[in-house]
Amino acid sequence: MRLRTAAAVAATTALGAGAAVWAGRCASGVALTPGRPLPGEPKLTVHSTAAGQVTLTRTLASQRPGTYGLTGDGCHAAVGPVVEGAPHPADCVVRRLETVTRGTLAPGTRVWLTPQVYEGDPGRAFGLSYEDVEVDGEIGPLPAWYVPAVRDTWVITAHGIGATREHPLVVLDFLHRKQLPVLNLSYRGDAGAPPSPDGVSHLGYAEWRDLDAGVRYAAQRGARRIVLFGWSTGAAMALHTAAHSPLRHLISGLILDSPVLDWQTTLRAIAAARGTPAPLLPLVVRAAQGRTSLHAGRAAQLADSGRIEVPTLILHGPDDHLAPWAASRELAERRPDLITLHAVPGAPHAAMWNADPAGYQEALRRFLVPLV
Image (cartoon, rainbow, N blue to C red; front, top):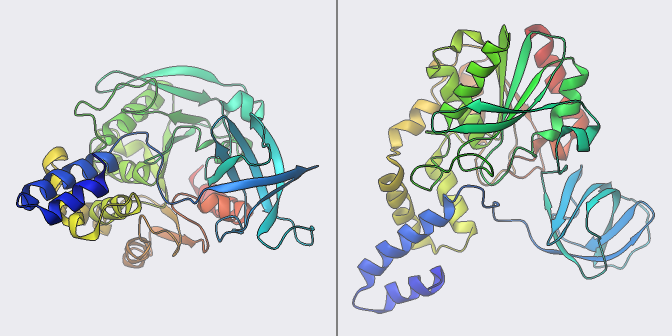
């Protein structure tokens, strides 16, 4: 039974309270399913393609500045900014077509924008030499890509909810040019990695142990300093690891993109975007607490500035509706000695690089120079 139908049953039958609880549990399970793409991006129609251009349905999303992936059933491409002055129908917009990595963008194809610009591995994306490695995780081996470089400061990346380890590829070429070894890690629930024991995402509160396994792996291979780079729930994992890892003395910096600092707010936003009626949202949070052992106090701990002990760069913006940036702003204001906030307007969740690649990479450069 679909969630909307369950909600209607809850409102119109004598068993409404029980049905509402059941619907809340179902909605929490859907919101916490590992690997499921995040909701919210509107479907667009490909109207035509030309040399280096693609014409799409005009929406607020298709007019965003920056560089994005364009994905649909059987196809994936990378698109750049809007092409000003290109002729097009009034209900369309023309964007620069960077490359088609899979399938074709035939007229009528239904697609949507995604922060994941690249598909494949570091070799396919950038022609970089890399190793397929396995990290010994808490519940099993974790596939990872290791891109070697000459420095002894490593960067370990952790993607966020609804993404894969292909998402951090957007910064891989930049980090490699800075001669930083990179370990691009998968974790429980990812393809090829062990499933979460209870089948649901814990929004970083359990998954951080897999990132900690990556820290151990880097130390065993000679890393003297480690920078943790996380997106969304991967940023929450980085904060937990920096606070609790037995090897936290090796962690010299944190880079947090769109950090999930309040799991309740993020869970409500995901459930609402997937069609959960507003009256059921408190039940979604309650059901998630029961399934994952999360509690409100953990959100306060994660956003506790006193727990941050290393230089930290937060990349976030006011248009993130899944992880409100007010929490990031408040965290940075409480620790100006350690935390730098780089604001990115016009970017949806975990798409801060996409909205302004040049500005994002300059913020990374300024942050990393003193650490390496």
